[in-house]
Image (cartoon, rainbow, N blue to C red; front, side, top):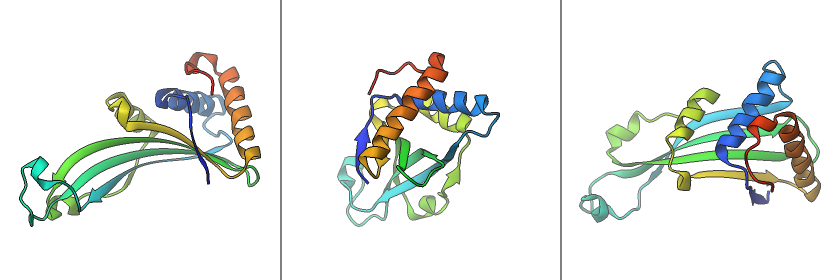
Length: 155
């Protein structure tokens, strides 16, 4: 799937999703998942962290991901908001307790509020040009329905 970087801030995406969910009494025509996952890099510059070669540490980054998808089979698109936060080198024992977990929208928004903006990304994935156009129409429509939450510039 092609990926498209949007001029839609992560916080605006969350606010629009929240407004749409509230307007639809908790049942928007969207599927959403929110998770917190971990990426462990085994190959990294150990000396930059004061570690010696041969020490068994992995460089850990937590990645919170909000995924928004329409409930349709044609012209399919996925809006993905990610927040990366480096945790640093962790021992195998420390890594062993790390588990993927589901987050609420409130928890994701809290993480977003304390995130480094350079480590936050909003991306659109789509299958066809028609899917991109459908997303553009959906975003324009949701911004029109919830103008107080639509602070970002146009695409």
